[in-house]
Amino acid sequence: MSIFSKLFKLFITVVLMPLIPMALLLAYYQNRQKDNILETHYNLAEIISYNMKQSASDLNGRLSFARHLPALLQDGEDPVPLLQNALDSQPDLLFLAVLDAQGKEHFRAAQNARAWKEETIDLSAEKDLRSMAARQRLYLSPLEMINGLPVAEFVYPLAEEGFLYGVFSWYDFMERLQQLRIGRTGQVYVASAAGEMYLLPSQWGPDVSAETLRGFFTGESGFIKKLKGERETYVGAYAPVNVFDAYAVVLQPREEAFRSLYFSNIVIILFLLAIATLAYFGALTFSRSLGEPIAALARGAREVSRGNLDHRVSEEAGWGEFEQLIKSFNKMTADLKDYQVLQLKNQVSEMKEQVFRSVAHDLRAPLLGLQGYIYLLSSGKITEEQRGEYLQRMDEAAKNLSSLLEDVLSVSRVEAGMALPQRRQTELEPLLQNVLNTLRPAAQEKGLALEMQVPAGLCAWADPKLLRRIVTNLLSNAVKFTKEGFVKVTAQDEEKQTVVRVQDSGVGLDEKQCAEIFEKYRQVDEKAEGYGLGLFISRQLARAHGGDLTVQSEAGKGSTFILTLPKEEA
Image (spheres, rainbow, N blue to C red):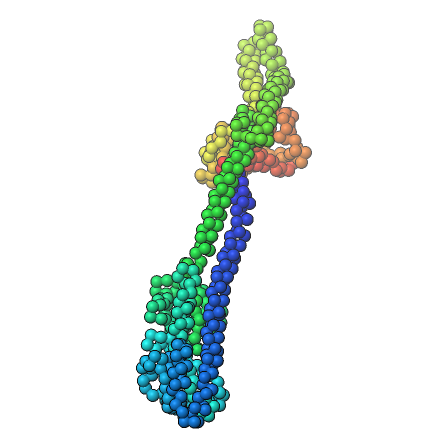
């Protein structure tokens, strides 16, 4: 993940995290506001329920005229004028009738002489009639719609003289309820326990089914949180009116009831979106302004680590302290460049001195030999046979001198880090076979067996030219220091590297010799030909490949040189 991405996520998290509790608080606030609206509806429903109960209770007092009826009945007088007078003074009393003790009608009076209850009233079949007479209290029936009017029947016991039966109109009360408005379209209704609405002819009811409404009445909360109609969804509350087995119901379209909440929600959401948008672009800008100089410095550091000391970080990418940091970084790379140039000059100078010392030390003997032979040839005191012999020895000395110069230059290149292998996938079997064929005449002359065990197609990640030189050094040393027996080369895969082993049955090495054999100018057998540079150069070349060259040996039991090379590019 890039620096910019990390910084951007960090800033977004820091800025937007507070919005989460704000959103949760908003949700809690919205729920509380909805509950408060429903509480208001419930309070109104309870007020209506109380008023209906109070009106029913007041009816008991408005029937005080009924106390005179027993005396009139005992004296045999007609009670109709008293009933009619009560009807005239109380317009919401629509019908009155005097019943005997068995519940049968004897006298009646109707409001404005209208035909009301044309059939004779007979309550003799009512099971509760005797208990009504015994308790001497007013009994009200559930509300019902008669001739388009909401009415309730009542029975009032007249001591032992019978009962007063009447019909009481709730039209005025319902009309007053119709004038109440909750919001623009919300209203108060009265409904039966079965969910049927008591509606005036001029009143429109909500488009809800009685069955759905009845389902709410079975609950205990009193709230209607979601009532689906055919065209509208309502919220509201209800309160029971026990005296009529009815309910006062307050209903308001949900959209209208919560409109102010929806509006505030939209405002708050837009506000949160504005904050989130500003936070996003603010974090984007700040992360970019902070991430760009850091990324530029990181790229500069990678370039410097790769050895590119000419790389410079643009100072335009920095601001504030970053600008000063970039200037310091560029100055540091410039100083490193100067130091590298100075160090390289010192290394070149030291390498030259070392080459000169090596040449002066190692070339002295062959040069003196050549000078001696030249002096003898120029003296004219030698025979033709001696002349041919001296020329042959001078040729050998020149070849040795050339080989020595090549080794000295190789040592210098290796130590200066200039022997960089051009590595590629190199098949080992043909390369090793070619080296063995070159050395086979020398081995046959000594009676040595040359063996090779290399799987076909086995490859190593190496420079073929340098690898050939390493293997040639190892095999030629093995042939040189083995008097009898064998020289064997094997190769195999081991985990992530390829291992080449050169084994011989020669003189072997002790522990001290194993530790010193890879040093420059170190020879185990000082009488042997050579200058002690072959194994040093071979190990350095192996390490330049990313591998190594080691030895396992025991005096008198032969030696095994182990060359490890990578199988693929690191």
